[in-house]
Image (cartoon, rainbow, N blue to C red):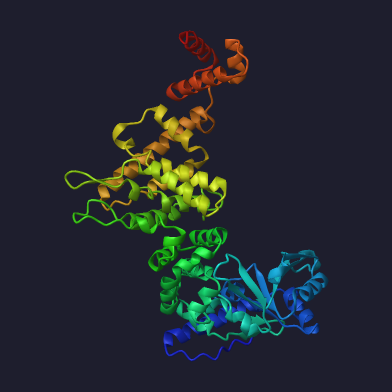
Length: 502
């Protein structure tokens, strides 16, 4: 059993009780560490080296969560670590030797009692620093566990358990901060954020993942140093933003980004949504509206076997960013009204530009931009009464994004007018029912003309070329307008169109 006596003396009875609860949970989780991990500790000790479980796995143990990741820190050099892991594991690999990290896997078949492989990453004690003009951290290897823990982002991640004896190490009182739900840096926050500015983004991410508050000193340091995030690569920023968005409470993390000024440098379109509310309150606070849409979209995600399994990064990005075209399109009308004409088209371009700059993959960029472009398409359905043709176009234009579009459109209704909200919900219910009926009749997800390209060439006596494409598009338009025609009627319509071309 681990020795869990961090020697803390909290004044609050509630905090003291929370500490006891954390310790009990940790005892249960850490006692269940795979025997293979303890054996690895024995191998390092026999070779004259230290080995300790560090970071997230230790934090999660106190939160009662068994972690699939086994991250260790060691006094051994990368070469020494690689040699030991080669003897311990069935496979090992160089994750980033220049950063001191070696990985290894021991297959489950070695022990009949194991249900899964044991995978570990072992990193030599180190300290990272940024050159003020560089986007890449400089790595220097350290010589003590306490020194290694001091370079970590927050005290709740600066706890360790030495193996194989399972001794708890907490030099920066992270357990107390874990019990209090506070994100505090193990050293002066300015030094910590100066050494690695990405830690400022991590503050927002952990606020979202853990529901913790950022320590006032750390918050103040982020406000003063927010611009320093610009030296970090777009890829690293993107990864932190993505982890924030797929967390349990992304709103909390996004509020940290905006309130500290970090968002001005990584996602400036978000704070730009804080439009001034006119004195008559004739339009919404678009920033708060967007956060509410995000919350509602998350609530509409499904389980793993559903249409949109959560957490869905594409849906969450679209919910957050769907209105970013509004600041560019805002117009004050006569009589005091406010309009945002075509903000969905402007917003789609802004979304694509920002996500490309953050190095999101092409598919994600296109999907989020398309959802932004389509998010207003539904409006007017309840009043105007769409034809079957309009419904077909809605489905076809959404393509594989249809289920996400359903959820984005429903979430975009944040009116406090209960009668209006009920009317919009009923209208969308009706639209979804019509889509279902038409899908049964016509296989909407794969709408094609009644004649394919080969049949068109045969009827018109053409060879492949531009005219075949024109004929195909004409038949597709007819298919949208009138539904399935059948090959005979389609042939007649094609010949009529061809003759009319002169």
